[in-house]
Length: 559
Image (cartoon, rainbow, N blue to C red):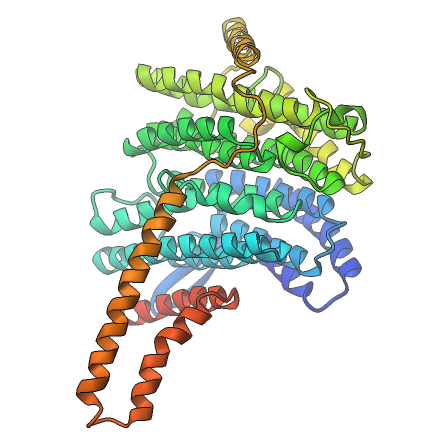
């Protein structure tokens, strides 16, 4: 491969800071399309290796696993760019491209250090995507998001340093889970994947981005984490149980939620849970199932968020209690949203049907009956919250009296493309099976499988309308685990602040006769400076850059 698609996308992103909005967006579209087409014809290869302090940084490694994720990331970049043409924030497209390019680069790397650096760039760019709406809610959510990923980055960095020090190997292949440093990396990956109890950063941050920013956010961070787990920890049994917890956690909170984009954000947690179960089972079919499901999920989740984003763009409203009856004036948005809802629910002849079921069958093949049973029950739950609740309360049920038209043509075009892909991949599953890491020995369209899935969906649909009085729209706020954590952390910080104040005051009294008073005053003021700067969005980038710089220092120390 003569070009590195991730690097190209990152360069396009930085180009946007120095060119006009129109020029940048219309040059980015054809280039991203060309890179997407080129990625379909690339064979397995390793290249662009850079020697740094006697270590080989492999910046380009294309194999079965990285190809799946790089193709869908490029596809998502192209569709996201089309959808966001009307975005008024001139910098958002640039940050979105840097974010997407870093995600593509991360899955194409072959060493741990390069992977870490690109993940940190992703964290920086995605933080600015969240901050793009410039509201108080987005600023708070963006800061919390940055802190979570800063913490995950520290864990991953410590783990990488330890693994390199013990093994002398920098390659990003399967890691030894028994190694204590590998466990640091494992936990960092889980945080980035939104694993419980760290799941709440997803519904806390994604809905605060713009109508187009949340589409990009849904595709890259959690799926890059899924890729990293599939690459580094396949077959780790703990992933099965963590995945099941995520699945049911996402269902429960999505059913309780009122904000349509928070419903879909909790659904991301739920769907990533399926992928972690596949990674935990660890067989070839399970890895194929998790990879293909990640591919399909990125497409139908983006379609659902585009549908929700279109409603937000045209009405300015996001809560189900404020919506309803929009099918009358937004039929195209409604149809595309229903297609996405059918795909996430794994209706026959949609992409979800031919991918998600591979994970269930892989669990059954390994005689994991209770895991299989949990996945089947969860499939019904998915139909309840994303397959029915979202389109029902937004487009049907009680008429809100709103009559907005369908969104502009570019937004409709992006939804057309993703709707077509959700159906085509379901009708012709060979198109996605052909790019999976392992040879596929699975037939989704058996009479027994189709009938069983239809019965499951009909039962779930019946249950929804029976329980409809209990699920009616109410103006509620769901208190997640992050609320408890924030309350506890606030108390801890207050206690720590008082302890620091007392210590510095005592220090001032004991050394005032030895040190210049102005110097002591600067020490006392340091706490206030840190408190102020930690609230500034620009400090997020500084902290992340410090992590990257610290990585280089660790390499020097190790060598």
